[in-house]
Length: 350
Image 1 (spheres, rainbow, N blue to C red):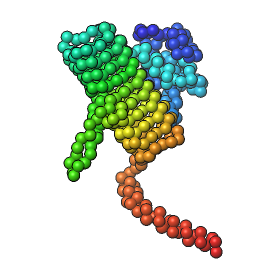
Image 2 (image 1 turned 180 degrees about the vertical axis):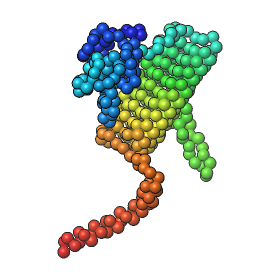
Image 3 (image 1 turned 45 degrees about the vertical axis):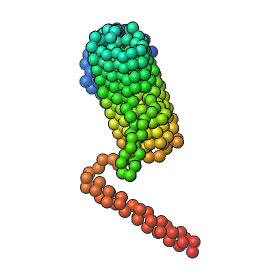
Image 4 (image 1 turned 90 degrees about the vertical axis):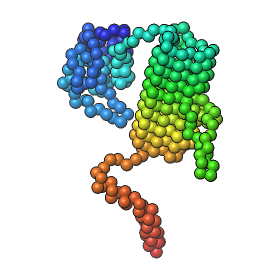
């Protein structure tokens, strides 16, 4: 099905979706519901926070078809692909229209490859890559131009390292891993000890271990462990510009949005969802199936699954200044309140 035209009958079969409308309708691309035109397919879905702002466009959309759930079917004026998970349906259909680039196996003449490396014959090593000694690269893996891979590292099968990815020494990753440009894996953790006002560097002796089906965003950094390894579980998805410190463990299928910082030694469970710019303290544990909304500051362990939030919502500056001033008096106000409660309790017993 890797072509630029698909009938709704083909897409229905591909998604396992119910088709309501013309099976011969031809789809040539995908677009947002309010901007789609004839020949394009769109979608609508409920996110975990109930975002359904596009519902109003269903009646007048110019799209030739819409991927949606049964609850929205009656509001839609065009052909429909009805499925339980429209967002997943959108993702699968979008993949059909993703431009395909021909990958040429082999090692580019400008690449530098060290001693005792094992590189699959159908792997692709791009221009100006530097691969040091004792590196393993698996079947059908693509190492794009300008990448650097340190000694004693291994990259599994069907992986993609985009341009200018840096893997330090001793990095081990599984199969089908995608790492975007500028990511740095295995830099030293921030380990220092103070000796009479002078910082002494603690050697970082651990490695980084990355599981299967992991995706790591652009300019994200993952530090190596101090003694034990930093571990990224199977199916983990990391957005752009995330900092993962030394000895962090992230459980399988957890997703973390951009600009989040995870301090050293933190353990994050499986199937968690962490919003953008969250801050997670070191040496704490977050259990499985926890959702942190954006800007959350996690200073203590979370032992129960659920949705957690922190931070102060945006407000006019004048209001914020008043509340900030009051916050400085919060402890005194709490003491006065407890004192008043004591008086009330005493009066009630008289």
